[in-house]
Image (cartoon, rainbow, N blue to C red):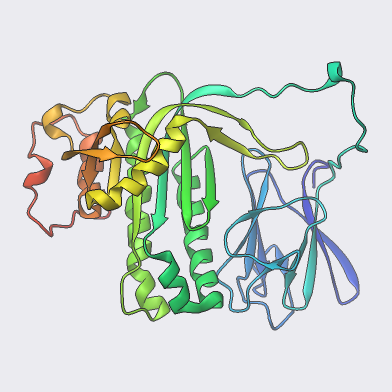
Length: 342
């Protein structure tokens, strides 16, 4: 264990243990022997919870869809939450304490000249925002315990998908998910957009299976939006709790576009700037259908492109194709569902 690695400490049978969380690693907690932290508590599930350490060094605790839930400092874990030094994780009767050896110095007011200046770099990014449709009635139907389990499954899987697709940052806000991809240079590479669209496809596959697993008589749906633009990237948190994220109009507009998808009657809205920054570009005749979107806080309307989930795989293939003079998107027969693996 490196002296800089965070770790969890706990006791079993009167013996103390410490398990390190490696850089970009995952610490799995549960009764099964393959976990990093193995618990003997019968209230713990075989795969109960996990702590994931991201590229910035931050650690996030998430419940793995356990039967009895996970508590952090006495509060139920519904979505991935960042950990701070001294946080107490409770699983059944077992308590674990999160530790980081980089303890902050005593709080003394430094001279003004000695203060570290915050620097946020301007970078081109693409933002993916998803939001569950009808979350309030869904949570009432399932109840607190079951909605917590469902959200934990969604956030855990979404985090894995975003990591696998190379997202620079990810946020879980209420029932919304935000993924941020940072681009080198001044263009959105076609391969990156293909990966982002792959996340949307895999999320839809996840949502398709939720009703059967949770005994629901109706589908669980979500809307999504993509937007590309320049934003400030950096640590917007404190020295004790880093929070690497993106700020700027590109992010704000992505959330507004997702809201607009409801009025437009589509599943995924692709911002005009995403199409404009795409390299190599798509010919106009091969772009998805366009419409004018009205967004709160923005004057006038914005031209955007609309997709149904059944068409996303088709669009993803087209983005990385050799720019064939193919069929227009709206000519796809209604109800045709492209293959999930492309």
